[in-house]
Length: 235
Image (cartoon, rainbow, N blue to C red; front, side, top):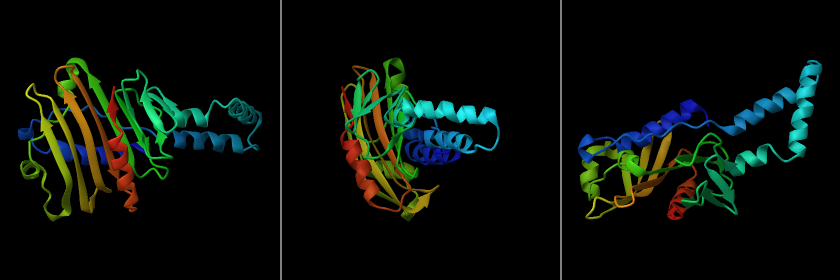
């Protein structure tokens, strides 16, 4: 996914989650992702032009050898520095969490275990997992109010925004689990649906969340995102 598009998507997510400092919003160090498919396409254009000389022909032969070894496209779409996708289930590199992204979605190849993204086949939709442990975990999260009515006061955008769900549970030690989803009647920077699920454990100092942004007009993608959020598991 192109960087400018990713920044627009993340801007929507951050606008919703950080609309009011009165909610206890804290900085969340999410980063934009580059699309590995675009890189592969550029390489294909170089190898496909046999009329530009010996040097380029040699480059094409080297890339063909790489494809025969099975070390190019398949590896990029099933594994990254963040972890591996096997039988549809993504497991982080350390094995500390798992999630099942929608079928056919691709792992972005420049993430790591703390922030990994998956993109839909058409590149319009994204699922991103953020995992932080230790002293930085508390600062990585958002602190949500107990009720949807309270949260609406901070993030309301009028009639264009509809809360699909809002569930928050608080622990006596400051721990919190949360899940909510918002549908936009008028797309915000291209995003028409946003959903997030996650938790913060104050005792173990671990924070994890999975968030999905949907631009596709097909409402079935919303269900795919929700199904993926159901599978998020901290081990």
